[in-house]
Length: 219
Image 1 (cartoon, rainbow, N blue to C red):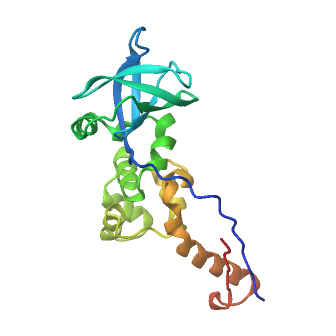
Image 2 (cartoon, helix red, strand yellow; image 1 turned 180 degrees about the vertical axis):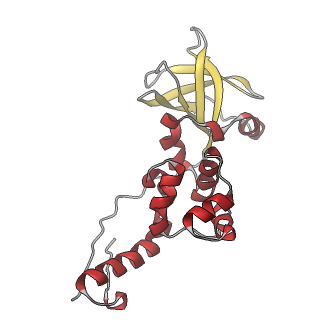
Image 3 (cartoon, rainbow, N blue to C red; image 1 turned 60 degrees about the horizontal axis):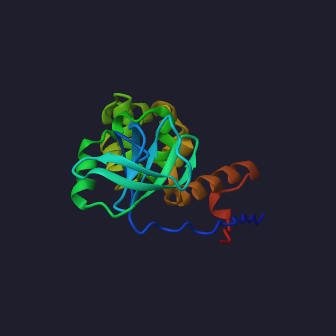
């Protein structure tokens, strides 16, 4: 019984020329002729940043924001939605400023309502470690709950391997996040595991073995 699966892929997203660093840094900023208000920097590169605040600036507006090392920096809002705003700097910021921002940031205490943005740009290994620390769990705790060895969890956090998709549901419950937020934007790396488990599942349903199931993906 041949089975075929067809996946239609979306057009690949454009890569940023300047990689963004995911973080959380409290700052102040506002319109050049207005009062300074609290803002939170969620990610940053030499060319721009993502910020959040209770006051939402409109696309096209110019703001000044305080950055470590650089002081007051001017930026332009290029998009704005649900309290989050993408900005480009009037002039690229220096590597020293980027390092100072990163040193003073605290991604580990990121509020729940900002997690989806951070997770979208964070590698799985770093995300797993951050979420585990946020829950106050050790690698040994996670290993025991999942029925794996502690070195296996360590390898996941070092980016040397990844947990099977079958463990992702349990892992997401332990860390209090959805599977989508846990896996993030680097989910393509899980495709071989997903296909292997799909073959086993289909084989059980139709009463055959996984090696008799062939899945074809057309991209």
